[in-house]
Length: 392
Image 1: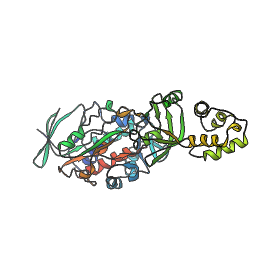
Image 2: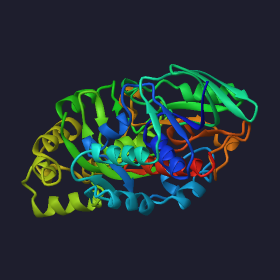
Image 3: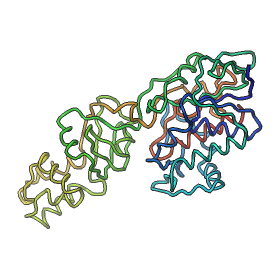
Image 4: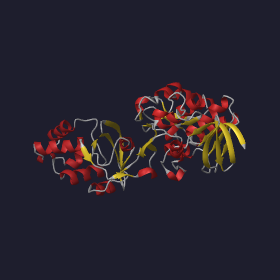
């Protein structure tokens, strides 16, 4: 039987961070990845440039039934700590907006940095290697794997959630959690586009590829970003953000003029340009095609002077508070994260260790901690992986 100090199941962001950190402490680390290569989600993230952290990461940027859980790990491993490693390896990066840090070149730069650190620490990494069973054995664990039997003092579950199954996600980590007596909170797709199934779908299809600045709100949360019309419905950063707080049947309210008092602006336009058509006025803030379609389909475009005060107020209200009820989401197929997961009330917030089974750790997306869009989920991967590695 092969013997090691730590077995980490999953070679994604959290698993690799945990591996390199534990190895730097002198621990013998074995990483098992079921897919054919490590870091697949890292490689595809940020449009191929990896939004690897956010300089403004703080607990308020995370959703969990136990909102205090993430505080300790995030405080002890900050974006600046990760940036120190980025600087050491000379990875060029830039801030895109709102504290979002991206690679200048390609996501592979971040993955290679992590793998280099793992090699430096002597981490043994095996891909195409599944784990069939984990059992308690004395003070440690025994695992049945494609490598054969493995004995370890500590086991770290870094298998992620259910999002983007084409990358190899299976929900294995949830099964392990249940086997060792943990509750797994209901899961659903997060940071995911909405699908539209009612009459609005025609508008979305006709405007597919068009984006617009907006504020999207639902269930007491709101985000100021762009929305994007698609053939299936609505996407873009604002929609992805609010999708994590939406439940089937909920109404999403979208302000298409977030920088303006819609009614005051339209009244000013009516006074200054009475002969201009509504579509022409709206084209100052939207694309010409979007302005024309909204004007025709929603209001019936006509010269501004022909809108009576109640009509103008109705136009303003629709633009200020466009209310939609999505038919659903695109699901795990395109979701960036999985909401829900292993209940953190039975996990140590300082070490990520199971309170039910000492030596068993859960890190990253498998836990019920989900960040906003913009590098926050990567920062949780780094921070939780680092926390577990201090004691695993």
